[in-house]
Length: 226
Ligand SMILES: CC(C)(COP(=O)(O)OP(=O)(O)OC[C@H]1O[C@@H](n2cnc3c(N)ncnc32)[C@H](O)[C@@H]1OP(=O)(O)O)[C@@H](O)C(=O)NCCC(=O)NCCS
Image 1 (tube, rainbow, N blue to C red):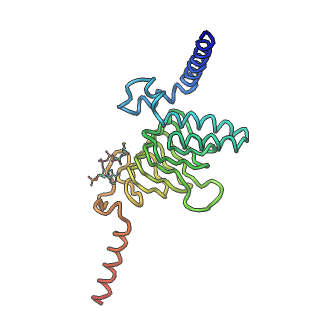
Image 2: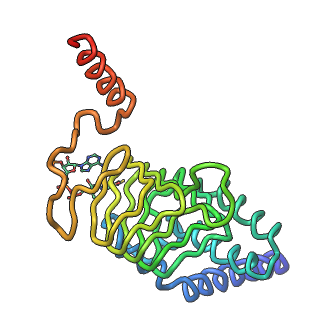
Image 3: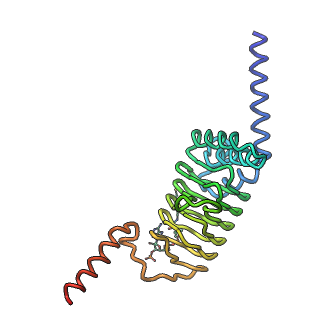
């Protein structure tokens, strides 16, 4: 009986030590998550229950291993994190301070992605490549950028500081700082708070095939008239 109590106390001590260490080392990341999610009620809730925070903790350890050139271990950890959280962050990616992934399921961040400070991603975001290219092939995201649910940011492009990428947008070109981008392909609708694209077709914005069909139809109409 005494032995059982002793073992339980040891387990409890290890757990408390682990939680304290993570809280200390990742304090600013956890606080950032708390600040960015209006639903977050407490530090402990974020620490224990937010997959975005857990994925970041695994990533930071994996990135350290990657920089030590322990590539297999680093990938092993990132794959475990993917299994546990549904978020896949390549350990080679470079991520700044106060980064937060809200909800998280389905997020993919590629090996050569670079992410600035204070960035917020929602579920389903991909920071990926456009094909089988080598070298720097993933995006560079500036400080304080928000990327909406399901958005895809592809290729070696730069998203400037303080920009917003709308939910489900597909961005394949550079985005200047302080811009809002929505749609497929992504178009800038606001810059420095001013609306700039009044001709945006919101009805078909998420259906590029329909848009291409309509363009073809209008060309056929023109040819038939001739
Ligand atoms: C893109 C976004 C940041 C725009 O916010 P905003 O600056 O307040 O812009 P507005 O709401 O004034 O919208 C500007 C225009 O873009 C359109 N728009 C907004 N978001 C859009 C989107 N994701 N896709 C397509 N069009 C969009 C609006 O209909 C509006 O069109 P209008 O000018 O014809 O009225 C925001 O709509 C968004 O998508 N945020 C992501 C949030 C998210 O992923 N939440 C998940 C929580 S779980």
